[in-house]
Image (tube, rainbow, N blue to C red; front, side, top):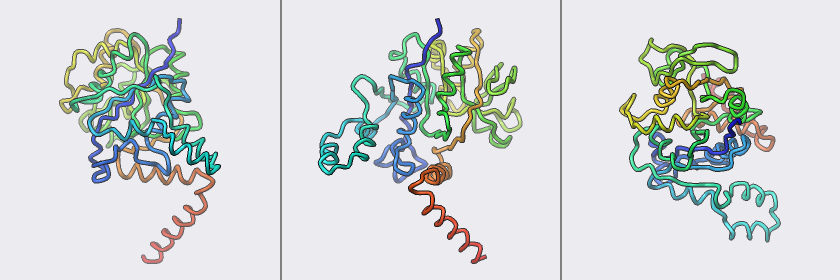
Length: 297
């Protein structure tokens, strides 16, 4: 019997120091691209892939994140009274029903692998997804939905992957490729943040995973890896050494690294230009800025 993926882990315990001072009081995950928080893009992607249970790995100071997914009866009543049905529907799309969402506290910043391990009792013996909200992916078919289809075929561990320049491989987990089958590649290993010039390929792992329970078992060892942290890629590679298949998946779409300021700004512009209600005004502004800079030169 083929396993279904119905649970997803969202590691959101980071402090977001690259976005200070904003993140002094606002969790990075609810900073907005246009008018939707980063985490809403991740939730929408998960729902489109058939995820039914959402597990957030949080830390101190994330109360606003929990509030975001709660019902807001006073606001809903006010929108209903004023006949703003379009805004009411948007608001309702952010609500999470009782039992859909769970929150686990990561008390120490011990790495992504440790964050995933914190959810072990809620996963049990079934495959699960991991979504990093910092990685926002614009795609006609959501990235995780593409991966679920691939998992139904392979039933093995799958990591989303994309080509990166050689100079950037030291910033990612990098796949050691066994066989390249196009959108899916089988692997013979994974290297977390290899030193310059030592990467086995330029196919980098980004923030989407579908994993088997074996990976959680490997995380139980709590072995520190690169940077002194418990690395998820190490546990995935250990599962591969035990005989499980690990695949890289070249997704269709554009990934934005919203953990960086430049990536966040690029995503904001790209998502705004994709909207009919914003495109013309924003494009005219960008054109005026470009023309002014050229004239000044």
